[in-house]
Image 1 (spheres, rainbow, N blue to C red):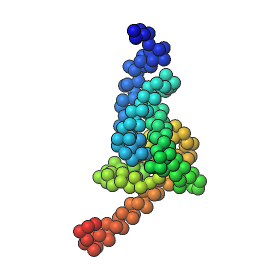
Image 2: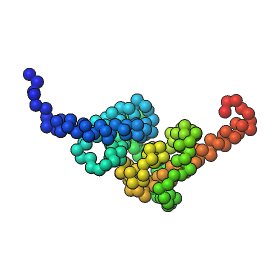
Image 3: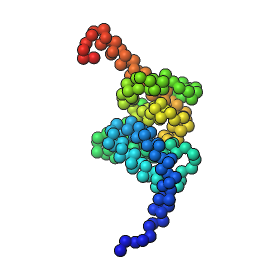
Image 4: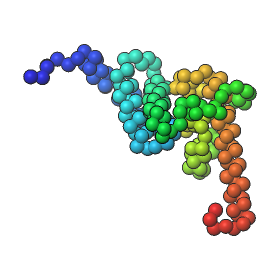
Length: 205
């Protein structure tokens, strides 16, 4: 006959459900966005979010604070990078070292952002060209994508991004500056291409 007494840790987890759901469920879209932009696959992102939420629920007793988003998305991020690492072993995706290639934090990047205020890229993301900017994001290294997604799509503060990524705020600001610079390069290249198309009148452009 099945035992009638559930394990103590399972009982503890279940008792946390009424508190966990109202805090975590509204973050599911942000969790999916981060996972998707890291692994670039909707089905895999859905699996990652499901696994991350299960991990978060089991660890919920360790959560402290009022805003669950940074804590929760840090778990999503770690789950996504664990997935990337596992896939790397099969030779299907880049390694974690490659994910952060050209994503270094030296130089004057951090000094290029003096205040926690909207940038041209943020306004662009919220305007009619949102879809285009998202396509441009896909061309950036994951180290840049994650901070840009968190800042400019999800609206996280520098401090919250630092909590999610485990990086100092100065590093976050440097990656944002460099990522925005790469976005501008992609935008300039695209605009040049469209201008040439308009001049030539090629139907294939």
